[in-house]
Image (cartoon, rainbow, N blue to C red; front, side):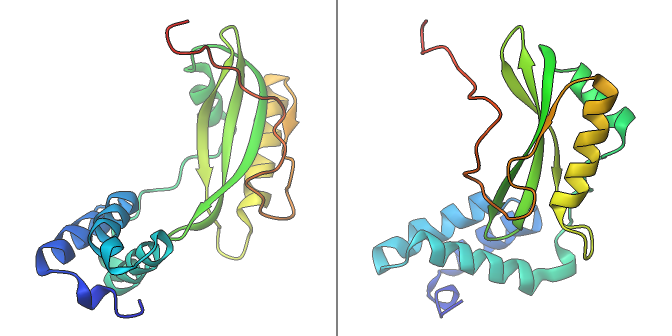
Length: 172
């Protein structure tokens, strides 16, 4: 943590630990960064402080259960979305606290958009890409739509999307 934790006031430490113990890393990072930025800390420094708190608090952090990845659960989530499912897509994402993970999303038509189906983290020694790929292909097959994963072998949150989601301009 490079000594940044020691430079926080007790009130901020309590605020950060409360956010970590609620598994809310972004408010924790914001609290650290707001206090330490005037002292020269960058956003990455704040993320490292919070990651250190996750490690220090260990088993006390209640981890949210993983999203269900079975076809009936994913199909139910897809059916609840406000449009017709046109494709299933897997996308890399990540952060300092959780590392790389894969998002499964449904690309929608009528109205066009996308909806989140699941977040897939590492499963033991199995890459989230393998798990998300299997679940995404199974769901796509069940729904009779295409499946797309631009970068299944290497984490790349800038990999090309199947399509660009157009959103109407504000007020349009």
